[in-house]
Length: 180
Image 1 (cartoon, rainbow, N blue to C red):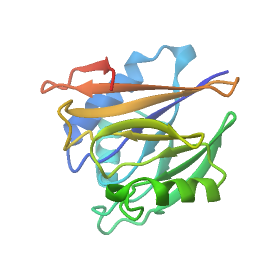
Image 2 (tube, rainbow, N blue to C red):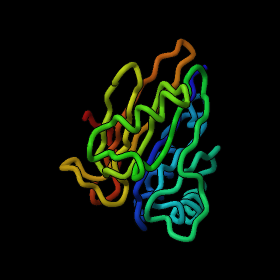
Image 3 (cartoon, rainbow, N blue to C red):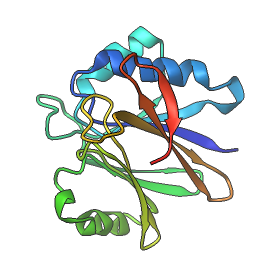
């Protein structure tokens, strides 16, 4: 059975936008196709409780802290498995992202991960480098992309494939699937 992850980052206080994402995640997926895990990649951990409670969205959570998650205790990195995939997740601020992905790739290889999820750059990104999928969902709260505010849904299938879909929130918090 395939499993889906809701992946978001960098809400920076945009609780209303995050609530819209959680409402979409809760209401959009049919009962046989639910999101099994929600992944927060930092810089907005304090927004999760308020938005999730308001939306009635409950999930298995994987959370890492970012450089703006002041006073909140959370790991900087985390490794977990879903189906046949091993994920290495981090915010990214300690991995030299603006100078390339070498440090991030090294951390993923050290963790024997085939997929890296990171935030910090506020721009949706997906590329496979050295057999490792590198994914940034963008930012729910402060996009640095012409696309605007984004998040991702990743489907992990039993046959080891990984399907990545990106979604955009418009100014009314309406959500639609996009290509990056």
